[in-house]
Length: 438
Image (cartoon, rainbow, N blue to C red; front, side, top):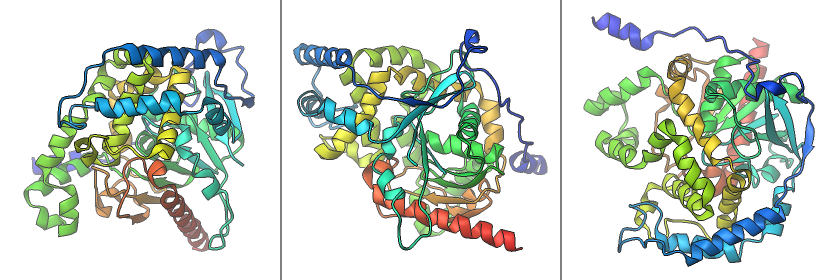
């Protein structure tokens, strides 16, 4: 019995065969689609600006229920903080200036498997955002990554796509487009651009997509950098649970403090995972409400930035939301969802994780040899030590453990992330050179 249990947790499944050409778009476009790479111009149209101004005025005139005294963000987005966002967004956020900011890099679209996929091509690092982020998450990283540095002999060429159903990329018209299928689309996008070997960076949902890419296409990805280093395999889960009973048998004291107590971690997930449950079951229901109200959308998205940047933010009346400079960038992200009306299609990916559960579990339990580097932000609520990560990422070449930062480190400390990407890719390059000499 014990042997069978051991086999169940250590068995490595065969890599599934994915359909690399499955058609996610409308059937009537199959024979007439344009698969060229087309320049794309982002526009903050006058009609959109008039519409959002009207909705801001409607918000001002409405009697929105006020948060109760001394609850901070523990009941959700605090009404005082939301009023601050409203005043800044409606009176100080300069639409024309932000439109120019969005256009500072070249944008393109190309049709992959029936879907128009949007991406920013700055000059072969594939940057994959998560939810509720978007491509603008990486805008402040671009000048840090494509600037020559004396301590490294390379700069980056960045490909920054909007994942299917996010922002300016088209959503699927039929069910089934989950992280594994998005991994195929991202790989096909790189081939369409003409890049057959590349590095991948990902965080949050982008980590899951990137992890599937290096599992399905290990010979095409030269290295994987992640800021959400999590091994979702059965073995890692059972180790975490057993480790809670006898932690000192497995772990150093410093690691124990990051992984446990299990009750504290479980309570956090129960309290903060409500959005996951609704998006995994009824994304279209909540999506309809968020598409109607810019302030509702901002509340829903910014509350996630608050909580997952630092869990203690929920005890602050302002939610730990940053100064006006970074608030502008966070509202840029909200604008991407508002302008494109893509919040519903972006949330459907969580429903597809459930629909494709067996495929997701299979991919999570297949080790990958692709060289990997992990940056573990201090405030990330999920912590796994190196030995657990290596069960999935067998060529984990190193990790970085900064003293700050949360899940949205690209917003919080772009320099830290840029420095770590340079360091990781430099080590990847040396890894490949050493292997060629053998």
